[in-house]
Length: 332
Image: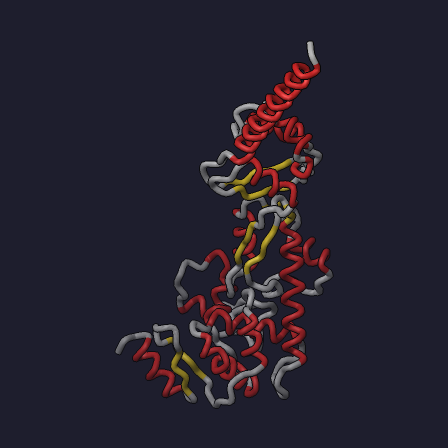
């Protein structure tokens, strides 16, 4: 065979090789970019997982129909093989390349759990129990208090109500700890900036009052005036007489109504029967309630009653208050 024919044969083989590589590359690209997810979902990559094993998991989950190109991709695209464990959100229409890029970043999906202002520790426990991918507390309230070094009888009031984000399988204890540290930071800052002459000896007493104001205030604009009512009462030795404390003291017995006998019952929290503040907060107060507690309005109000629209009517004496009760509560 002449040199010309040999050269021609090699040229043909080279061209055929290029064509084969082109089609192989096209198939790999199609394999990587073809949409695999028909609806947004979470994918969990177990601790210790590797690229080869992940392919088997994807095959079992029908994310891929076969593994023909899996090993080749591992060789040609090594940047896609740095598998990191965790739980990731994969959005609808994601391709295999999209999935692998997300898993390679290690940026896990952030779950969230929300605790509203004025909620109780009991309600927090129920929310934590229902939260998906969140490990339960596995500690009693007493154990939590000891673990956090809290010198009080309850966690009530000591946790900051807001939305917390967490990764899959994180312990709920971390949220409790973060919420406590946040509330402590806010409380101490506001305590240092408080107005002079308030009838609270410690930040904890202010926290107790803030929890009451939180439960009493339907409208944020009223918080400082409600605060002034309670400050004025404390200054003259008048009982607080606030229904939320009665409800808290009733515990499981509360069925949505407060009866005359409930107001007469002497519990540690019934401020119709006890002097001063109850022994602990009755809910988790917001920063706004804490601020109002430590910056009350300057008033001579001693009473207030809900007007039914989220606002309150304030009175300086019992006669005026009774008229307001007749109008706004009894509808007379």
